[in-house]
Length: 446
Image 1 (cartoon, rainbow, N blue to C red):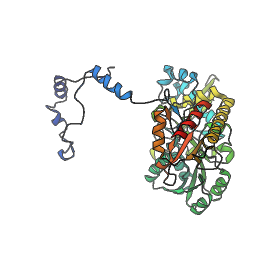
Image 2 (image 1 turned 90 degrees about the vertical axis):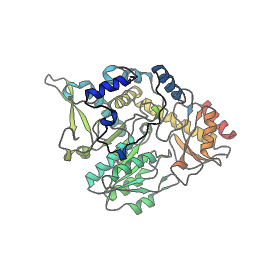
Image 3 (image 1 turned 45 degrees about the vertical axis):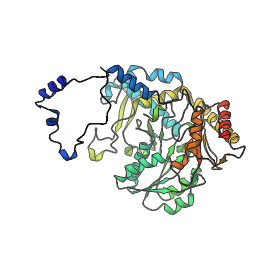
Image 4 (image 1 turned 60 degrees about the horizontal axis):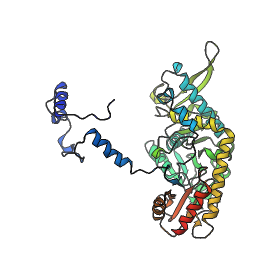
């Protein structure tokens, strides 16, 4: 395959001749002239292959990565350590060339990988069933909301403002085209406002969506929310970060009906924002409402362990009107990555990662707020992210940090008007005491 194919004027004539056209204009004659661009594209002059490679390389060199920067940026995507075995296994050709098991009887390797992934997600969330992975956490959340509406026959979704703002945007887009109302629950002191939830939940509420830990890194008390939700015969959807589930109560223990989240933290690199994977786990009662597919385990005619597509409630397998979702694929390679990571870390490893994140975040909180120059935005218990307030614009602070090789925190004012000059910082197990102390020193100088 050639990376760059220059086309000469003679090549153009030959191609037009082969399709019975005399010019490019004639090729597009069916497109009305009033909707055409009617000018040349704003592109540079043609380049040779060697010139083009140099040109693109100059653009690529403008990117800065975490090999050279120390990251304290979280807000949904996290710089966790990825054991080397993860990339070694997923780079095997039989894994990275696999798409989706259209012929399940001969796709045993793919099916087993998905089955193991499903098993581990169920163990982590303590839910009963999960599907074969989804596009990302945001779309998984939207699919869970659709599930809840289908199951309750109601048309209103309540979502806390402490849920990731990008996830809420995706949710609203999905619900808009299904005529499902989305009502946001206000936050107070960084957590879901319980009184506001009580006032807004009604007889048409299909589900309440909360994040755990929430977007501000705070560990919300979900007992009250679970009680209010179920008393109103609505469903509780928890949007969870998978790493803290090593030490916190699981969605299953809390009483959630559906647990969703993004699997980026499970061995998937940051990759400039993707691709990631979404997970969706639920109860046996809702198994027929789950989107996508479920892989199950059985025995073949010789009595050997084998794998099958147990549930395929998607439009490519059943009548379109009976399909649960338009999810037509799954992120198998990303799901395999998560499975390899979870198998490598094990229960003890996940707990250790969670403990280290917590301890380093709490150390950072104590040193960054000690002088009083930066004040805590909230006083609630947090996992590995917390917000601090400054008298200086956060964008200015982050630019100064970047000049010193540090990727700073997330500017909460981008999404929350009331949190001006407030920065959300994340501390994973990769961050060292020296790096945190350096961040403290730079912030105080700024």
